[in-house]
Image (tube, rainbow, N blue to C red; front, side, top):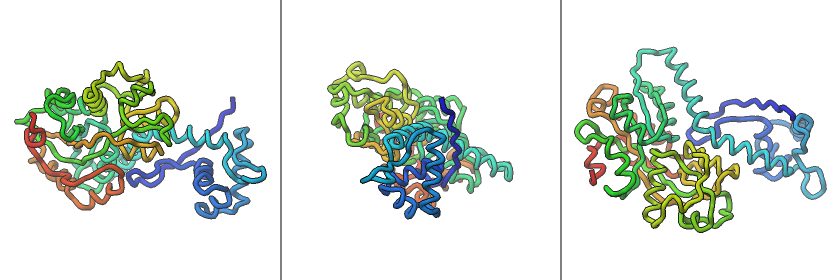
Length: 358
């Protein structure tokens, strides 16, 4: 088996932007975008057409596969192997995007902390979300550091209740009542006397499917009837809770769905499983499906809450945290992310006010 070594570099840390760059993959993606190597070089690279051809020929020797067509009618277009390579690379990138973004944020924070170790640390646990990682990076210029530990909505609330974190994030479907799976899952951790909720954002979840929706899936009922393989999230995650509520509303049970044996660890993992052909459908966020170039059928609008102790919201670092959330600069930072609405971000409400069924 040939051993091929790829090197990558981190790119712009703009939320939602591409994270890693590799010269070969960048060239092939540009050819795919523009239809030919000549058009790709002219649009995206400061090199000559001959230089680009020489680079690709060198890679063809290393890999042992043709990367561009050379015959009449479609010179300089991607071969079947190149298309397969791009599909595989995108699947891997999609699956590991949260870890890569977290690594980049941790490296940036480590550098800043080395220069200033006097700032207080706000610990965060809970539901994974790209906006939280964007907040971690944005907070590098604030009076505090944000230390993020993603687990799940339920685990994050448990950590807060037991004093292991200052802030946690969990998602709750808009309009869900006290008999919903979400209410039954989260109720036992919420303390209306000792905790408060901070509005962070609203976001859209739905079914992600392969480009073109080849199975014609538009609901969980379709997923069941067509025996589509469904990428399931772990128990305790907000998306798993949403899945259970949607099943109940459709008069179904989990046994009606063909569940993949492997659990998806995150929204991005769901998208990665679909991109790599390991699943036919799964529930994830709108922006995650868009970044993975998947089709998306919106199902639910949900509020992503931050929960904290009352003492935190009254403390100096808590007030600094809320000030940052309410700033126009922060809202502008993430305004380009699809499927998110930050109206009301940073407003503090009592548990019973935000969740009337409590």
